[in-house]
Length: 524
Image 1: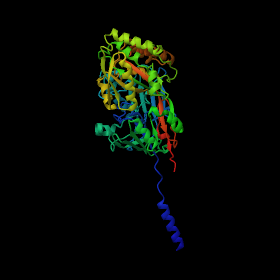
Image 2 (image 1 turned 90 degrees about the horizontal axis):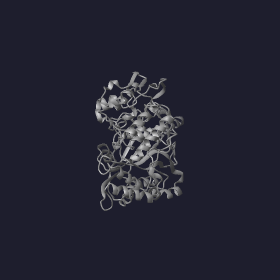
Image 3 (image 1 turned 60 degrees about the horizontal axis):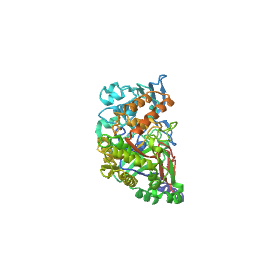
Image 4 (image 1 turned 90 degrees about the vertical axis):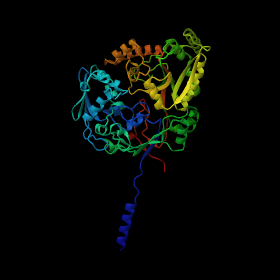
């Protein structure tokens, strides 16, 4: 009888053991992403989410360096025009459907179709018939992206492209589930219908509140993924997100109020993360609209804007004043700075007033225009400071605070005068910035069309010698900086707060912080 009782108690204790605690990462985001379709998504807010949901032929390792993703190897022909990527064995979508090279090729072909209107199709213009297919001037079947068998993706290029592996690491090159898209159309991205191939799956999306991801059991490296759930909380108010971090509601935040820097250094030093990144904060100037079609007005705008004073007073957080478009942390590239960079502010203001007067404007005949920015306290402070600086030369800025989705619409429709923008290059290469301003590029929101700039970039994009490419791109950047169709403000640094119980959050210039490489060990 005693043996029976002991056995019963043992069994009861066994079955009463609590399940292993779920490992959860709570992190902040910006505004809600415009889309979770890899070929159609735009804006920086979508990138960290897509990087968790999908993986392409190439991906990044725990330190942000490029490595193989779906591919396990690749070959390149001697002339650099044929690349073949071989896939891993046994790949699956999150619904258990096999994932093959044909899925990858179909997704990249979809990226290039004119009806997709993909912002980042230009990454693959070096592919045979890439630009003609995107423009609708060649049939899709002529595109040089194919899958000769279930495990091989083949790229036939028109010109050598040393950036192809980096392009394949961008979210636009991630595969989309053809079987779900053909079944559901645009509704395939809704929770409950969403299918991905990365370390995580979409579980819930409450716009403006929370986006939740769950571990994908069919991910090829699922055994090494420790975090079960990733919650993204879209928060545009920096004070709110900072307070939520301090309260322990968030494990990592991507930004914080600049005025809190001194307090943070004193009180949260172990949780502060600052490092260079490949991002630039800048303004687009609509050079198609009078009076901004006059280069004298555009140059005056740049002259009267004191980046250094703005950064010292409002943004004392390590960001770098920008007089170039390309980030100074790009490997082996010397940026081209605008010629006004070495002028004193006294001389710059005098020259700005002279140019405005020459163009027919001044404080007695001001230019009134809309200065648009997306809702965030830091953006508002910068816009207010710019308005004050420009008033001295006869520029009257009406501030427009709007959601990022509307800002994105304004950019695409050219419905703006001057508006805030940002870019985080997917490539550690100057072309990752400068190609955005090539004539006809979908991301060329200012419709910049300088033939000398275009010719230099065409040359740089067609050769594989990196030193020569850098020389040509620096010449192109110098032309761009003297045309003043964009107004660089600062080069980003990563400015994060990360709880000490999060392991594996490794700072890197690409800003890739993948939960699949992290663990969360909350204190008891």
